[in-house]
Image 1 (cartoon, one colour):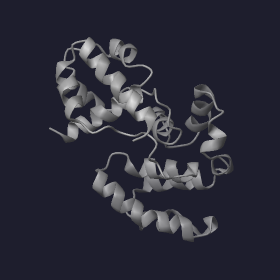
Image 2: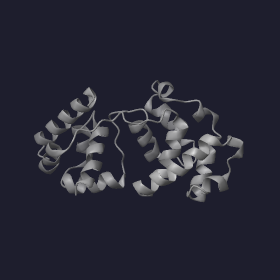
Image 3: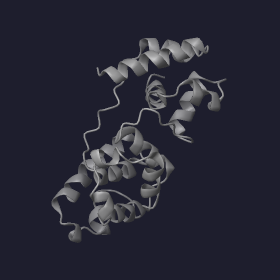
Image 4: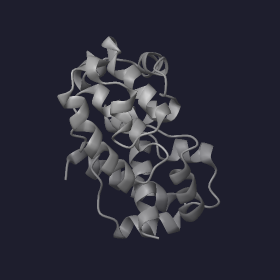
Length: 198
């Protein structure tokens, strides 16, 4: 387990106890510690495409589709990839259009984790929001799992909101953001994990 994950876990556990979030605290006592830096994608365009694939489908379905789609993207010359080729992997017409946009975006294909480390949050958001199919949620996921920003909060995420109702039913969202900063990404990870324990 990496040191950052250990520090984040202890902080979140301490804050949950301090602020009377007993149900969440009890869950944390039994939970395995979560490491943030486990994303294996080095290229930004692969990460963005994988994130778009995962939207609004189950984890199992996303994994299956990505397993079909990635070899297509790796093997084909980009000039040979069209909507029909992408749709053969099982994605919708709309997502195929988004993926083609990313594949044809020279700026995105030139970026990696290293180049984005120097971007401010505003600079990253401005660059990504211009890509069709990328919205605030995808930007937040990119910050969390690609850049490994430890303090991201995803407003409107259905899983997080469901977990909040279960583990922190009387908590005010604004206060939660303050209480668990600067480790709100880890807070999100534990809330998502908590759903799996129900």
